Length: 232
Image: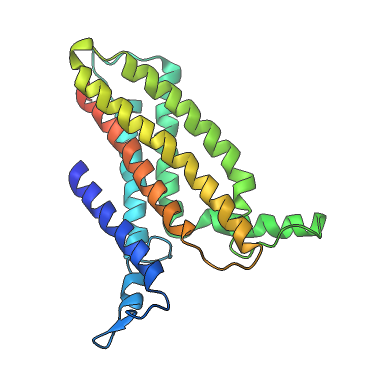
């Protein structure tokens, strides 16, 4: 499952960048076909598309992989109750984020929060796309993610020394997730800043989706490597 998922992820990442580059370009319409309109159907940045559906599946796959760590049993897989509880929360959280990918709940909450801010602070930065969700959710999500990284690192460190190749692979995937997923919030913040100056949609949105998909896939792969090692 891992390799097909990775190849499909690369496809949607490529189509997302092409959708951005085709906007207003000379090759937007070739042979009577509006290629930009076609690419919008597989654009990770847009809602209610094939790409959004795939992105939701990636989050769901992460949730299922952590179900194995949170509820799976193996005589060799001895972890603390607290570690197991963190993995269980991660599984539930990833499933909820999968639903959010389709329903765009965080943007809706962000727009509501922006209206609340405007009532209290008339000089608040403009926000028409719900970027205010960053203020509400980013600290919580980042805190939970860093806690998860800590516990995953502990579990990987307990792998037998004769499984050094698997340990290195698990560490590598965890490192990629550690770099990419916090980067999503950084790109979101920059997009908000640019939008406040009416700069329009920038290529940063494509990099945001790139970091999100690669980061979540890496997290999925890390959990799968651990689960496979302990036959969960």
